Amino acid sequence: MRLNRLAVTDYRNLSAAVLEPAPQLTVLCGANGQGKTNLLEAVWLLTGGKSFRGAKDAELIRRGADFAVLEAAFEAGDRPQEIRLTVGAKGTQRPGRTVRDRKSTRLNSSHPSRSRMPSSAAVAFDPNHLSLVKGGPEGRRHFLDAALCQLYPGYLAAERRYLRVVAQKNALLKAYDITPGGDVLLETYNEALVTYGCEVMRRRAGYLDQLAPAAAANYRDISS
Image 1 (cartoon, rainbow, N blue to C red):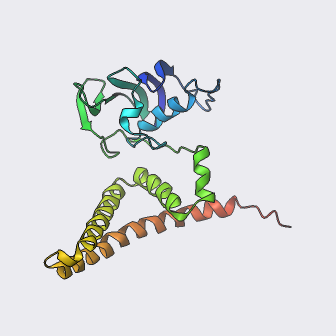
Image 2 (image 1 turned 90 degrees about the vertical axis):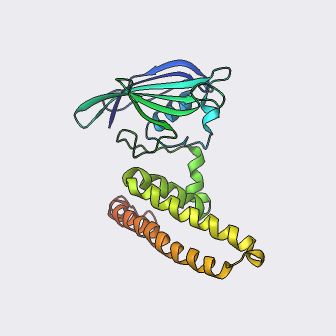
């Protein structure tokens, strides 16, 4: 996907801003607090995901406004498209996220999944991502899962199934002594964890196998 134009209204500290990326490379520069990262975050939202900074939707809306609006013009393949993404606060006429195409036909309401958003993929790397190297494996798995969700639409559903079963099993274990038929349920959850867990691990391993040749080609031994 190629982004040609993005206009944001009442998004974080941006009352109104327009971004028209250059054909090859675009550099945003300015003083601290002007909204450079906010604008990049708005581009990221076009992938259908949540904020890469971990913010809730309500935090994306400019203070005092009822909703934020993102209007994007882009090319998917050879076909130009336009969408309008609205992020509304609770209690307003348009709560949650709503996506419309240029003909004002609703594509999806509430939280749009990547499978329902126009085909798009992005990679965000900010100073917080240094934890991928310095932190524990949980952050690296989360980063890998985010990439897989963009590359393989079915992966998001597989990951959600796995996490749902993990949560259900943990809830059962907390109430294990008083839960009738707990042994049967526990065995059922264990079988589901094996099934869904293997699917998640297979996708992760396959993706890492694809990245290995590129990593090896760019590896430089500086010890000698």
